[in-house]
Length: 157
Image (cartoon, rainbow, N blue to C red; front, side, top):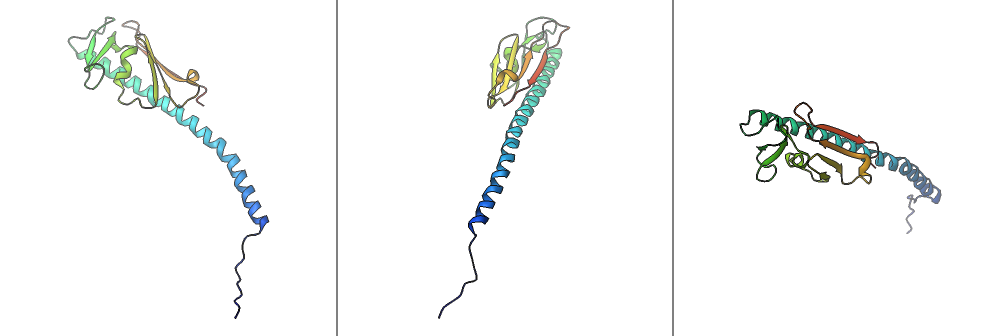
């Protein structure tokens, strides 16, 4: 008794055609995936920029209502629970200094920070070129010049 099977496998040509199609799809998908990574890093920078602006405004508001912080002087501190050393944030003209602004941010995971009293630079740690993929916070220089937040995202690869 013999059974005849009507099932057959794929031919070599069919397999090669499938592999070629997968190769073509991969050639188009990989550059798009890299582009999405750059877009994600740019989005991270925009988020950090917005957080810095909000933190500076919050600190200034707190300094305005505080009896110990002076918004018209180059010094002063405010108390913000969970921020800085024992919740103390150093101020320059009512706004956080470059060295203390990062303590106002809740989470800087995967964000590199380099700070001095005058300025702080933030960048995604996954970016290979942090010189062209960063946010720079520059502290207030007088009572009439608020801090600036400048985003550079020309190369976030």
